[in-house]
Amino acid sequence: MNILTTIILLPALLYLAGCASTVPDKSSIHSSYSIAEVKSFSSVLNCDNTKVTKIRADFVGDYCQILAANIRVSLQRENPNFKYDESNPELVVHTTLEEINGGNERDRFWFGFGLDWSTTKIFVKVVKSGDIIAERLITEQTIMPILAIDNFAGEDAILQDAPVIARKIVKFIKDPINFEKNETKSWGSMLEIGN
Image (cartoon, rainbow, N blue to C red):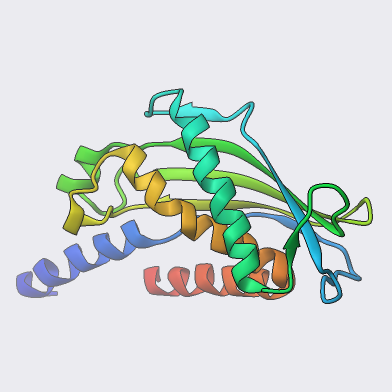
């Protein structure tokens, strides 16, 4: 391999390795999963025991309010027939914010290649008629913040991911089997790139 090819290929491979997502998370889906007839839902977000790394501890409370609102809006956007009902919902979405890691904004900006990205992990449990019908750990990682608005800080990177995580949660709730296929396919295609 000549030096020019090495100079071109090495940065490209490092970039692709940095953009690769993590291994898909494990999940559990009840064999008779269906929410087709569901008209009402409630959403519960537990942030009590969140593992916090590289951000201020009191950020969790603020972030949870934003994430809870994003989840509710995303559910209602996905299915306009869904009505939020805390008193007698047909479907309850339990989410637990397990971890927030702000990463290192300087390393992400100056070195890139996935170095010290921000990470958010949320465990989702879908309950219908008192039974857990699906559950999964959903992870979102930010490698490159939105550069156009100088969004380099760990907290800013995590905040920009709130709508993304909410949409992932809703896609999982809507069709967990298809969600699993897409997550596995995404990971598989990243593995093929690396080979």
